[in-house]
Image 1 (cartoon, rainbow, N blue to C red):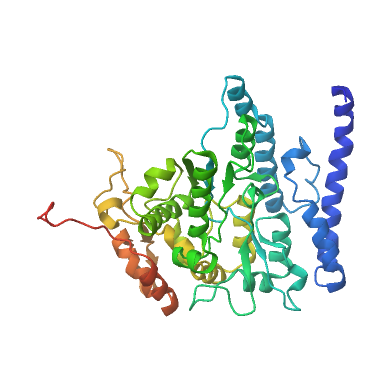
Image 2 (cartoon, rainbow, N blue to C red; image 1 turned 90 degrees about the vertical axis):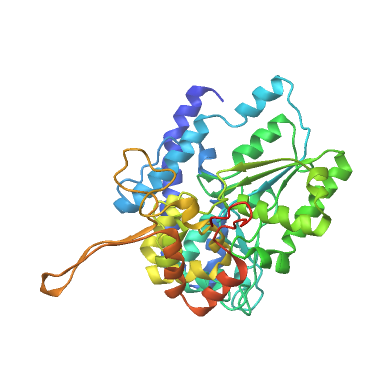
Length: 426
C-alpha cells in the first residue's frame, strides 16, 4: 500500500476505533451485570488487548466524550505507545544480526511484581464464566475491576492465614512469553527485549520466561507451584540440550526472586551448580535492597508514582478503591512484602543523614516516613514526627493485623547481619 493510501485511511481508522471504544464502554455499562451478555462483552474486551501501538494511530478523537481525568490517563498510555512505535520494532536486533550476532547462551527471563498476568482457574458455577480469563494484566481486567469489584478483589486477595488461595478460588500465573510481554494495551513490559532477541535468532527453544504468581511469598511459590524447581529443571535442560550455560535476566522484584532462587538451588544442588549452569546474571532495576515505595503501599494502600504500575491502573485503584481496601489487598500479598527496604539504618540512613544525600541537601533520604504538623483544638500544634527505616518496621507491625505480622516474621528479615569478629565495635 502506498504512503498516500495509508494516510488517506488513517482518519477513517481513527474514528472507527474511537467509535468502537465508546460503543464498548456504553454497552459494558449497560450489560455488565447481565449474565447472559457477560461472555460476549468479555470476548470483545479480550479482542481489544492487542497492544495499541500496533494500531499505528497518531491520535484518537475522544476529547469531548471522556471526563478530563480519564482522558489524561488515556493520553499518557497512547503517548507511550506512539513513542515506542516510532523507535521501530526489531531495530536493535536487526542491526546486531547484520554485524554477525546470533544465539549463543540460552536465556531465562524473570519478570517483576505486577508484570505477570494472572488468570482464573476456578470452576465453581459462579466463577466458571471467568475460567482462563485474565484477572490481572489485560484490558478486560479494568472492566472486571470497575463493574464487578467484589468478585475481582475476592479472586485476587489471598487467604491471610495461609498466604494461599482462599477456599473455592484458584488463580494462577499465565504461562509462555505472552505472560509478561504486555501488561495491557499500550504498556509493554518484556516485548521489546523478546522482539529484538528474536531478530538475532532466538526463539521459544532458547528463550524461557519464568512467569510466577508475584502475590505469593517465596516459600509458597515453591510449595504451591514448584516454581523454583521448574526454573532449575529448565536451566538444567538448557545445559543438556545446548551444552551451554544460561543467562538469567531479571527485572524489578525479579531480582529479589533471582537471589532467593540462587540460594535455594545452592542448598538443593550444592554450591557448584551455579558455576556449572549459569553464565551470567543480568539484573535490570532490581529491588535487591527493597523499595521505599513499598512502605506507603502496605501502610495506607497509596499507589501514586509507583513506577512498576501503569498510570491507568494506579489511577483506577486510587479512584475506585478506598485506601483501606487497597491496603488490605496489598497486605494479603506476601510477595509484595519482599520489597520492604532491607538493611535498616545502616543502609538507608536516619534523620542525621543518608549515604545518597547530596552535600548541600536540606532534607535527608534517611527519613522514610514523616507525620506532618497538625493543628488541634486550642491552637496547639502537634510537631511533625520523622521515622527512619528501623522505626518504620515496628510502626507497620503495630498497625497491621496478626496474620500480616506472622507472615512478615515467618518469611522475611529486614536488618543487616554483622560479623562480630570482623567488626568488634558492633
